[in-house]
Image 1 (tube, rainbow, N blue to C red):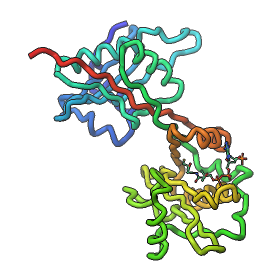
Image 2 (cartoon, rainbow, N blue to C red):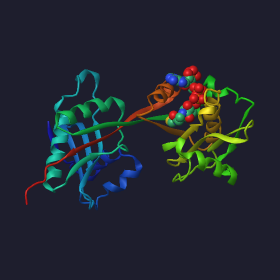
Image 3 (tube, rainbow, N blue to C red):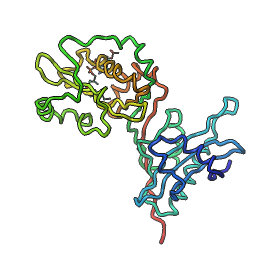
Image 4 (cartoon, rainbow, N blue to C red):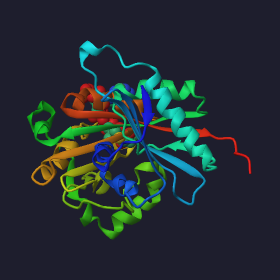
Length: 297
Ligand SMILES: CC(C)(COP(=O)(O)OP(=O)(O)OC[C@H]1O[C@@H](n2cnc3c(N)ncnc32)[C@H](O)[C@@H]1OP(=O)(O)O)[C@@H](O)C(=O)NCCC(=O)NCCS
């Protein structure tokens, strides 16, 4: 096995096509700091790695790590593939005097690839390896076939479009926003108005919760901020709220992604049970870093 850069631009593209769309421009040919490495066993690519080390920042970012798919007859992937790729990346990054090698949570890693990569990071002395969130990638049309999709919203509650939030609602929510923490529904970058819903409690007239979403791509919606105030929980609103947002979503969006943070294991279990089988991909996101010793002058 040897570690080397792809030989041609076509080969190089075979690496970057695995990147999330938003990261592709970072790997543009004009960018001198891109690092693209393959582990080659003869003609077979056994592993791919892409990183960017050309910004003015002190950190170099790993963007892609992908082990080659092996036929079942070929046996397990040799352990040294991931170690060799990481070691080569590190030695290149060190040469340029970078302070840290970082893998951010935006990094895409299918669950079956996480274990080999994280194992290699441990062996290679990465100091921080932190599980951040799980992303469920859902194929939309299948959701409507689920039994929970038809559950009715209890009479006490009603939906409204989040874009129709009244000024007095906003005042009320401002007074309680500390309860929502990261699930604050305001200031979303690419707010999606047709699928973002609020829930109103008719007995109090107040907003009881929300499911506020954002666009993630032309056909993909990010199911983003889902929150019920404690007094509205366990009132059978959870499934109807998700189903209603989906009803508005599917004509235009065929895919959805929903992330659950590592500090919410209960929700992860629930989503795994409810939509796990509808997902075409479930991705674990990690933050990992290796602090590098400064190289000499
Ligand atoms: C997540 C949230 C919207 C769910 O609404 P809810 O009214 O509490 O949910 P429900 O009571 O209808 O329960 C939904 C499911 O979770 C399960 N559940 C409830 N409490 C649970 C617990 N302590 N442990 C495991 N599962 C639990 C229920 O059994 C139900 O599954 P089932 O239909 O298979 O029985 C609400 O709890 C909330 O706002 N939590 C805080 C914010 C949050 O975690 N948001 C999600 C971010 S991804």
